[in-house]
Image (cartoon, rainbow, N blue to C red):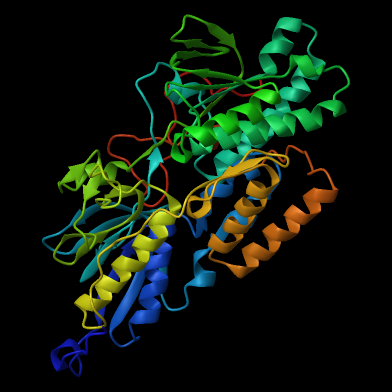
Length: 465
């Protein structure tokens, strides 16, 4: 039931509105800001969103960008287009002073004035999780940002070009060997869709044989797509294996070199392409806040609150899942981030006298995975689907979940075009290798709400020689 505002909740004549700041422009941040606009009248609060980018990246469709089936801008939702009275600041938050209730903010041109807040929502997103594996920071290619997705697309096409012109069969084989590390949702989808792209584009390179193409999916887990359960993992495995993909389970990468990777089973794979999708972790800022954490994520209560005036949601928040049966936290998925963003907005509004606080309770609606071509696996509301039916459900879910009608229209048009015409395979060359290095953690750095893009101190990324 909506709580009636007390007289003391209204700003007194001449009193300034409350300052509400959302840190991070991902799923949780965008949905929090949009809900706050709806719940709080203009005279009640000044709303600000701080994001390292001017858009929300709809990350579940990054594999389609990497495979060339979608233009990168199709999945970039401009923050200013969907937020109508929230001030959007394109910058990064480096520190939070809880005593003074200020944020230390840095933009591209340097530090800016501290931002004061009365209420703050920390929706800082995540960065690519790395392991202490030699060579990862130098040679691995990530898939966490639009820049990385576009670079990966160009890189894979470039390998086909260079292999077609190679005289040495050993070099040709190495350039046509593609390794994906991490067989979860992102890794499996990316490997499957890129494999489908290289297979369909091979006929345009007359010197390449189908048997020369080699895709290898590696994970230490006993199955692929563990998020969907063993049954769907087996179904997905059958699909990609039927296309010729090698799957090595119970195996890890022990080292990456300039033109090869070493595996825990003693094998060495000559390759110029390693896609690293082993999971995500909160950005360094979360660790530096000095607040309680669980497995690196901020430990919030049932209302997603950290302390007085401070809430957290999304990938960087650890909220207990009462439906898990194991006292686990909700997984870091876009589905939960969106809904948590709405809940913290309601709780912030309630703290200002508008509405009643809410606890976060959400049963997982299931997951979907696009395996390229007409293949997919899905479990919507517990209903098991595979093949074309799963593909249709997957497409429908993404169109439903996109928070912009304009993006939905353009993506839908691209999908319809792809049904009757092969996607345009061209290297646009807009991304420099340095800009597309694996987005990862760095001590003392962190573009909040956006993965950190680091650079290695030596060596070159796996890129065309």
